[in-house]
Image (cartoon, rainbow, N blue to C red; front, side, top):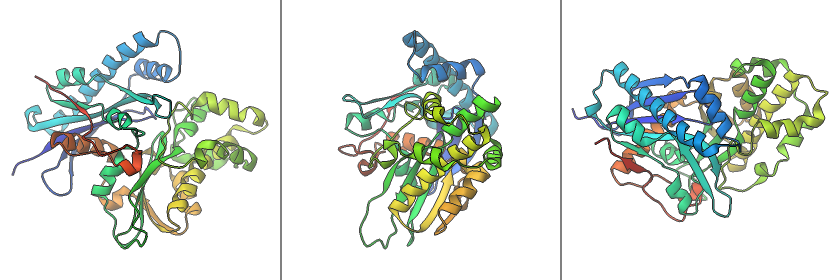
Length: 373
């Protein structure tokens, strides 16, 4: 039987590692053949975090990190193929998301920028690479994000119940899949709801020198401060209409320090609990604005935060809530598979964006080809 092997590479705003997946698209439903996570070396991670905020000597730092991240992605691919026992010649192409270092689509001349040199990936792996998926959508007047709703629509097609796919990475985004019996004939909707793990991770690192709050245990030990919660949720992003997208440019440690400056009397666990509720309330508010009830399936790192999942379920009692494992895909690998799917769409010259989601003027084939030869 012939195989249509593609590789997806994903590193999100959390910067907690590079996810690499090998996917077979020869049948109707994509089959995950192998997966691998590659840690980001400390010096590379420090450089990326510096590059995400304005600073000095940015061009030299960007150029070097572009190559370093490309090298790292290539290493992840080779480790994935070794684990799978699959030869590079069997892979049609690699779909690389890259590492976002700026996402500013709402400027007069909006832009988004991901690094991880595709030429370097192609040389290290000797496999064709398809990358730079977001900028065509930006050029067409769109947000360039989120791109995964097109994949969600194809793979998690709804039935007679409204269905929401919720991805909680550094930033959270939702895809609303209307039911087949929907009377209002709504289209698929998708947008970033706001911070996912980015603020709780930043506060955890600052206060405890830990990269993340395992299972939300620290947040669970605190008590949410309603005044601070309402203050943070009063940010204009949360009331902004869609299409919309955001990132570390807005929700970052500097913003967090500024917003919490007047709340120094709170203990650290109470602030962590409040930040977790910012994520949960912003998600719940947007979810309920789309449909009062339905099914909700969670993917991304937030799916493994039991306290986050508990609070979301409490805020959304009319939703049947689970992770995407219920739909046949482990929540950790959904985005990686999505970028393998986008590579496949590019290879077949099929569009990869949904204008109703991103605001682009039309559908388009996304990405550019960087051949290995």
